[in-house]
Length: 402
Image (cartoon, rainbow, N blue to C red):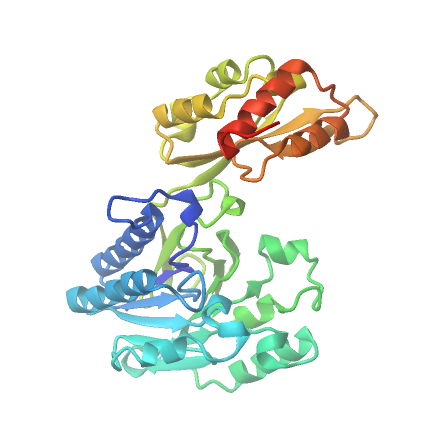
């Protein structure tokens, strides 16, 4: 049997990265829809009739009508077009105030559609002919479970998994913070460092294939002769913490012997719009400096943010309209902003940068803010800088008395 698996869809997210189209839809909603359809087609082409989803279907638990219709209509299309059935583990974004009234109820109310199975409790669906269990593990934290510690939650999860009636082969999707992800490493695996537990490999390796959602970056965590544990990440790029990472879906062949595990697992890269932060030092005129250092290959089709290190004279040459036009001519998906850091006098410290100031997207930018920034970084209020700052404020706020 072939099974497709995708990470958190997050329909309705990252609209600030998109454009408002002629039909008043945000371009990012279309990106997300196209990525989901791509994944479904790839799964169908491989012969899959099942798609498992790691949760967080929407940006919030109460999606707008447009986002909701876009998502559920694609699942309905996939069922009629390919006979695809969807198995969904509820994520934290699917839970109103982290209560247990989750996507399970939403899916149940979709006219009782048989092609959507959504679970907000640990559930095993046994496919007897395949000798296979599909396991759905939703999001758990101290709020949802009303427990004192994260260890209590881990004990509860382990007990429920042990009580599952599982077949010989198992494929699981799990919405949680797995050991081996960058966020788990950041917390140092302290069991109560967060309001949610870090899932140890001793739990997730009980399944032949265990696919985590929740943490957005793709990471293959563990692979041995019995199991594969992978954090598949989000389906699309949601923010700059995703940086320029690729996104993937998975095709699991439960009948084939894979590399090191009892199943064959194939990663397929998704056609996502990537977000990238470009950091560099610029001396002299900002625009000329960028043209020397940025080319089309670096930014074409991407969401781009610039973080520049520059001195006061360079900052005074910054023209957001000119930079935006230049980036658009290079074919960026969207130029977001330019932020500056200034070099401080060398004081022997490793971090020799000053504070950061965003001169391109600050809707509340004022002369007071700019003056404070310059003074905090020991920069003189030279006439060129102040004159330029006034122009920036006027562009943002309209004509005003300074």
